[in-house]
Length: 209
Image (cartoon, rainbow, N blue to C red; front, side, top):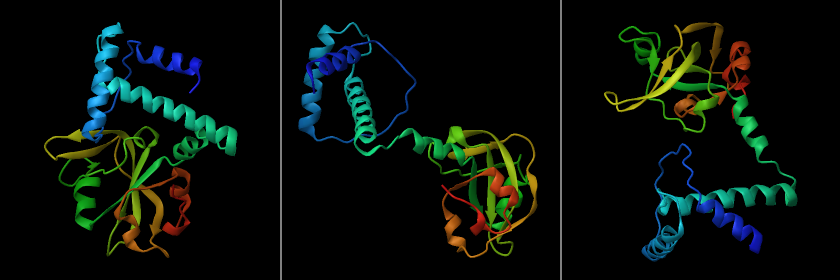
């Protein structure tokens, strides 16, 4: 690390900035934690930040790793990391799976306001998702409806993430039959494009990403 980049890194570290944050679990051995805490006490004595803490040090180290990694990939391998995020944005439709009665009772709203749960999906995917569809198991073995997504919300009563619809579920122009794929393929969350959902007749015609 050059002297100039060292200075910039530690100047940033000492700034009192509070962007929105997401909690994660991080496991370190005791020796590393003790060393981090010692450095934190030193920085706290010279910092004008009121919230300087262990997380600050770790967060800035991760930011620097990301910036250096992206620069290395771009200059050495001509890889632009941003294109990977652009690819994710293209897949705006979430597909989950259901047993028959679950679909009718929840997605179509027979016993509750139409919604879907549980939604076991990555938080990083949520901002890009606009539609949700459900693969219905035997005997239907097809995707028959979709809904526009209003938001994802954690429901304490259900103890899971729930997809809240923006309007009523909509029947597709035609069923998307299973085709050559195994039904087990849809046990986890899958992501496709809305245009392909409207035009496909079999699930193996859908692009996934």
